Length: 317
Image (tube, rainbow, N blue to C red; front, side):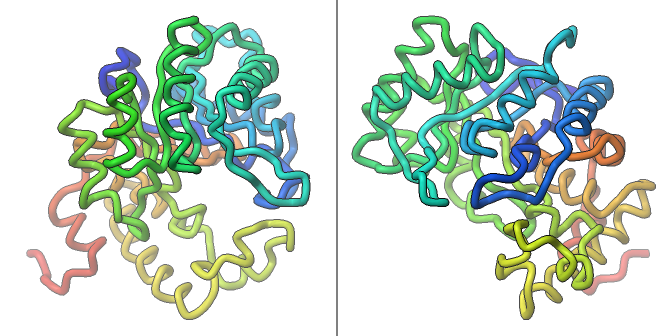
């Protein structure tokens, strides 16, 4: 199943390949060591199963994620759409810094094209609209890159409606990428309605809350994560929050049994129930994960399913 991403004309699968984790080690927000050959095999398996877009960023593994994606794309026909970002840079001291300066963006796009082995990026996104006072400069630069043919479409990530309005005054905002999951629903109030009104394509990230809603997480597994996996130190993965989130997973698992699928697939399908959401980014790391989750976009959750997920006490006969 595919859907048009806003006004871009791109027909995308409902589930996309998130390439954050495959960036591997060597930076402060890593998911632990990754095997590049396995990452490439996973991307290729995703393409076989109809996942036709990949979302990455130069900050993921400090360029390594883009390099792995570039290697994986070699010889793939049809080639998946490639979405990447600009504006979040390595600070050189195990931290990141934001830059929306024109000259910085021009350097970033050149480096991303080289690593990805592409002549043009299908969707270029402002990673974070920080600092806010440089957003107009950044968006004007993005519009230039589109006019030059170095990027085909331009969008943002983590924008507020006010920031989208600011950018729209310079050039159309074609897409937006916010976080969205059962555990993070802030965008429902203003961001999604704004995007729907302005026909802005929406692809959401962290639909499984970084694996917390996947059904594969437990207190024991979290304790066994390597120290270089950032999730081990995230409050959501620790008590008292953990028990509450795992109770949500139990309800997702109950609904998943109805569709012969996993809690994680239901968590992804839940994000796609809103008509303003076109695609959901899933962080695959192994081929079997793709096989488990690629079909999440085909699951149409019923009102009863949604009631179970919410934990409603009403019993349906």
